[in-house]
Amino acid sequence: MSPGYLPLDVEYRRLARDGEVMSGTVPMVRLGRLAEQLLSADQQVDVELGFYLRRKRPSVRGRASVTVELTCQRCLEPMALTLDVRIDAMIVGTEDALVSLEAHEDGIVCEDKRISIADLIEDDLLMDLPISPRHEQCAEVYLSLIHISEPTRQAEISYAVFCLK
Image (tube, rainbow, N blue to C red; front, top):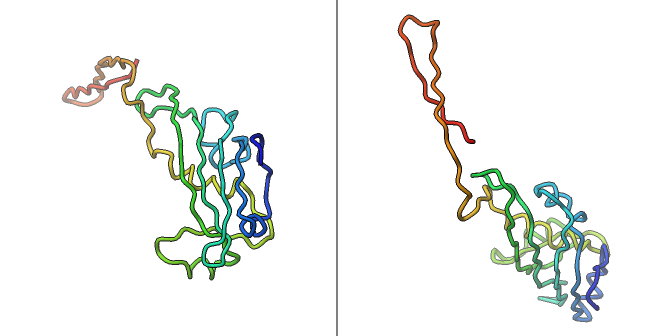
């Protein structure tokens, strides 16, 4: 398949039987769960997928990569992060078949004849997101000391509160 937008879904059994390889882009807006984690969803995910048969089951192997914009949890400023994941999974028709895979094998359940490209890549991209994204080096953060006293108590108790500026 020539580079460009990948289709919404594909006939994975035929692609695996024929050993097809496809590459192109998927708009981030198709990856709803991932897109809602980002500051903007106007990126294109670069995708390369090869379909093949493994132990007579349709399988997919490839990669997906995109640079996303998140909020740094240290300085609260935007930050860019490149996600680059490898995809390697068997496509099975039922949950029972998924359970029967070996421990080191990853699987995707698809009960239909067609599988969504977004379904093939979104979980791996989500797992590549850090729990608490941070710049390696944040811009300087200034702290100011605010002194608070509680005049309602008999003994004056002072609290020091640091505020980010």
